[in-house]
Image (cartoon, rainbow, N blue to C red; front, side):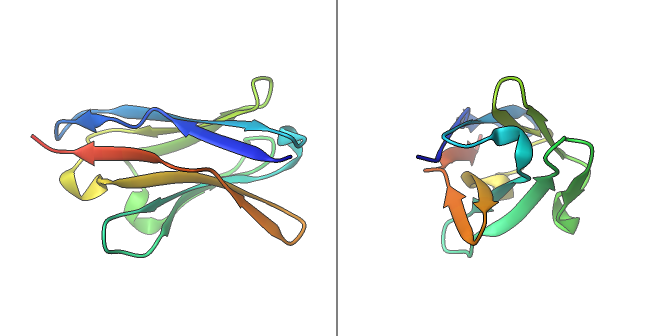
Length: 116
């Protein structure tokens, strides 16, 4: 079965950096685009970035451009999100997602907390 397992979330100080990972299994990872979303407390889940199946193309939500970098390693079946210059408003649960046919698959999320 399709599994997406995020990791790398942590408590960090403002200005710090994190790299989140999403380990994929149960499907041919290299055939599918992948996305990162986040959900802050009391807010709706929002798209952070999306990357094509080959990794050759990436798109970011307007508010995420500049500090976020999405990437993937198809040999390792792993998706990444690098976040730099973290701000308190980046505090959220970060999820990876893929769509296979009509079905959307989500990981369980990883918590990022930015606080001094």
